[in-house]
Length: 239
Image 1: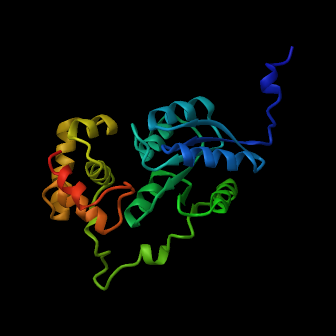
Image 2: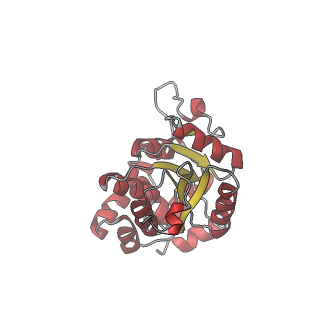
Image 3: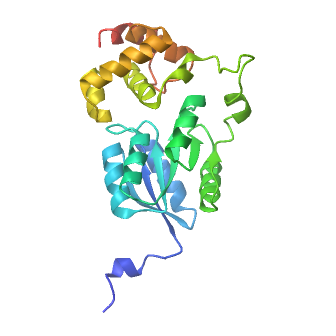
């Protein structure tokens, strides 16, 4: 007797993809694009990091497309968990923007590609082809020479580059308005550890309140929050 009928219908030449994207419109659009471009097919979809881990571990797809700013569990934590679990999949990270620090963190974490949401659909398929051939893909919109250039003193000049990966994660969640306990839950840390990271990043940036962090993020275009402005910065200071 053969296996279940639905298993027999799966073409072994197809490339299964798990898609984890927090915005329904973006997720559905990507799923539609992949559905019309053989050999790619979406084998699973979700909107948060915890579910992404479950799907990827259960399905072990050839490619996992993951939104950098997934709720519940940060994308880089998803990658780390899957590596620890021994799951072999090639990660494509979707980002609104990526500065030097984000790009380094993504690549160091073991992702195979960075694709910007402001890019074209062809960028995504170029990334797929590149990583299937064993390469690493970085969105063409990212000027790597400029991104990784140094000043005369051999330093990048922006204090954001001095933050560790964890400090950067805490920074991004703080400007979203999350409290220490909420950040601790999302990053699977203790509230005391989050407070330590918060104090350290504020010291490095020489900023000492959340409103200041929000203003800094806006000035450097580090946030993808749609309605964040200086008014929001003032209201977030109470968090």
